[in-house]
Amino acid sequence: MRPKLLIGGLFISLIIQADAGLKSGHYFQAIATNQVIKNELWNLVDGKKQEIYATRILRSTDYAYDFAPTITFFGDRIDDDGNPIPEAIVNVPDGATRLLLLFAKLTAPNERGLSYRVIAMRDDSDNFKFGSFRFINTSQKEIAIKLAEERFLVDSNGSNTIEIEPPERGDLSIRIAVKDEDGVWNSCYTNGWGHRSNLRTLVFLVEEPDGRIKTMRFRQTEPKE
Image (cartoon, rainbow, N blue to C red; front, top):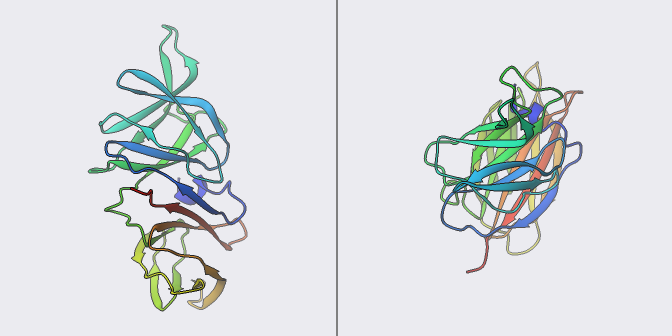
């Protein structure tokens, strides 16, 4: 399943700013892409049950996870022996200490019996610095971006992270164009985005059913010392 299907439940462009303390250790934040998670999922941390709450419009608070190759989330289901049945299993990227998890509720459990599909992305500050923009193209189309004076391409199902100096005043100009089947570039988005050196901005470029590219933006402020 392509990543765009996991975030297709977000129908409007999101411009959200969230504060998060970047504590040392292993932590994740979550976004529920198509259905709010109201503490019905939980994982074990040092043997203790930890419920999570995630919405479709902003990052969750920090949640800890045990250092392991995977994170398993459970719900209310149990097997015949009374053991909890996994609802989601997340593969942890090598070397990650902070993650952003994108949860998508399935209409029915899949062949593994899981109720959610989850994309896990590294969210460490050394991997995604404050003052940077990260563009994730979940479509099958090649996308060109002009952010202030910087021009770059984001391949289909690819990503690009770029560090930008904040403007002395005003916003950064942003223009996005998409290459069609005939190789012609067509403008699909123009705007001005606020930016500061203590912000990092995650941008999803999602192909909608009509073929248009939707831009979804999540901002995070660096915590004060």
